[in-house]
Figure 1 (cartoon, one colour):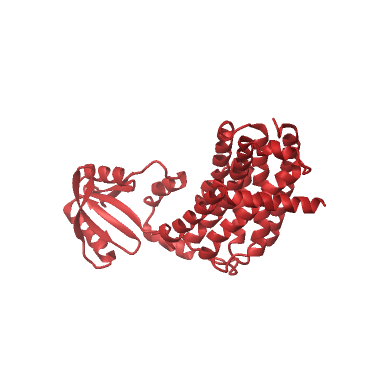
Figure 2: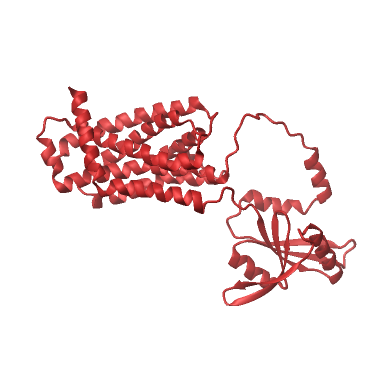
Length: 375
């Protein structure tokens, strides 16, 4: 009997949701994400670097340096061009190698303008011909976001003979620990964070929005006098969000990833994480009367939950407190799921953890709503 009531309540909520504004917002948002991933994010990002240099050295040394650049240039030809900086045009010599675009400025002032406006590395290379042998020094203009490791590298690399460094690198022994792995494209690498936001965290916002909408329209007061229980009402809302999340996740994942993911395990993980996120939304809606009053809390939670995505895209930045946020583990779970051969045990453990946490939140929300459902 309870199953039939829950099933009837779920079907009724699904029909109501299909007519609501938020339902189509979710579908539209998923389609927007898919379009952006397929057409705005390249298969692999351009890994070419751009350097702006100024050669502060005697003509003989300058010609020698330029000859070395010509040897590395793809067509062995330097091209004189102009770069627009605000209202000024700065003349430079452009060298194009396999992995770099190098621009030689005519003065240190031009170099500073270029590095500052283009937000790229700038360097002044100085040769003192009065010393024996002539000494070379480097002055770098950085942007401020460089890591301490990179800054230290710039300090050290010119204090040793490059031939010695290259020989030391070549002599290093490299051991391959595993060959059973799948390389993802840069486009595919963005999927875990997008799926976390769309498939799980959006559920927190949407389920709260549904309940606040019911409060505003008086549906909850009418529901309170029926034979259905509070937990059935909340569970039906959660099931609607779960179905919507599954559909939107499929819309995004299948065209991008094809047959690579373990979709059965992804379905389980999506249900568990969605249940957890919905539990947060249900709990929030129990403590506030309107979406306006709850918006600040929801907004702060969504921002906090998306901070692990920054750590995901910047491997060198992963402070300890990031691991305290649930979204960190949701992203890690999707990372294991988007390719075959991922850590199944880890994903199952995460699913169990989110299911347990979601159950606690759901029970808490049910108790709260039972007291304030008609308030």
